[in-house]
Length: 380
Image 1 (spheres, rainbow, N blue to C red):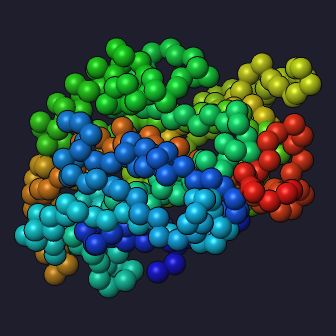
Image 2 (tube, rainbow, N blue to C red; image 1 turned 180 degrees about the vertical axis):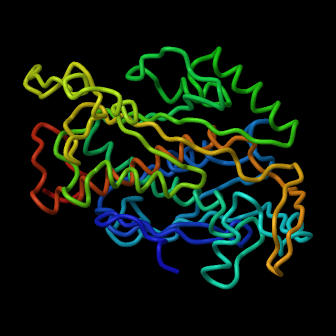
C-alpha cells in the first residue's frame, strides 16, 4: 500500500495496525554518529501513550520502544543504516468491534478503505487508527535529537489552545515550556482554561460524546533558509505532515485565515536587522516567506475535529446495502487534543530535520557559529 513513507532525505516508513501484534517505523537517512538518547525517545512515547488520565482512552499500553537495528552495539551511536523501532500492542480488545464489524462507522475511514481495497481491518480501524501515530512519535524523537545537536537553541513546543468553545487566555507564546504544557492533563498551559477544558471534556464523555479544538505550535531557534520552492515549500510540507494526522482538518500559519480580512500594509511584517540577524517586530507570516524560513519563530495553529467514535446511537449503513442504526462501543479518547500535542511536535521535527538535511545536501551547511551536525569519534 503506497503512502506509508514520509520525507526525502530523512525518510520514515510506518507499519502496523491498531489491533495487530505491533506498530513501528523504519528510519532511513539518519546520519551516522548521533548518540541516540533512548530515555528521551521513550519519554516522547510516554507523553503520547493512552491511559494517562480520565481524559484519554483507558486502553493500557506500555508503549516500550524496541530498537532493532541502526545502532552501534558498543557506543549506541547511529550507524547511518536504517533504524527500525518496534512497539508491541499488548491491550487489544478486538471483540469490542465484533458485533458491528460489517457496519460503517460515521466519521471513520471504514467505507473509504472498503471502496479502495475491497476489504479493511475492522478491528480498531487498522492503519487509520491513531494507534499508528506511535511510530511517528518514535521517529520524531530521533529527528528532534538530531536537530538539537545541530541547532542547540531549538525549542519545539505545542499546546492545546482551545477545546470546543473554551480557549486559553492571553499567554506569551515565546515563553511557554513543555513542562508548563504537561502540568495539566489537558496540556493547556493556562490553569483556568485548563480546568474549564477538563470539565467540558468529562461532561462530553459522560454524554457519550466528544469534542474538538485547536493546537498551537511554535518552533524557535531555527535559522533562515530552510525549505525549497516551489512545490516543496516549508509551510506546504508542514501542512501535509499535519493534515496526515488522524482528526486534523486544518492548518494556518501566523495570522492564517485572519489575514484575509487585513490589508497588505496591515499584514506585512516590517523587516529589520537586529544584532546582526534579520528580524521583524511582528510575525504575521508565521516565520515562513516564499516557502523558506526567515529565522523568526515558526508559528502555526491546527484544527482537530471531535473524535469520530461517540457512544450514542447514530444512523449509518452496512456493507450489504442496508441502512442501520449503530451503537458504538469500545475505548476511545473523548477529545484527541491532549495526546495529539506530542504527535504534532514529532511531525514538525520530521519535516524540519528533513528540510535541514536536504539543505545540507544541496548547498552545504551555510550557518556559521553552530555546533556540528552529529557527535562522532572520527575527525571531521
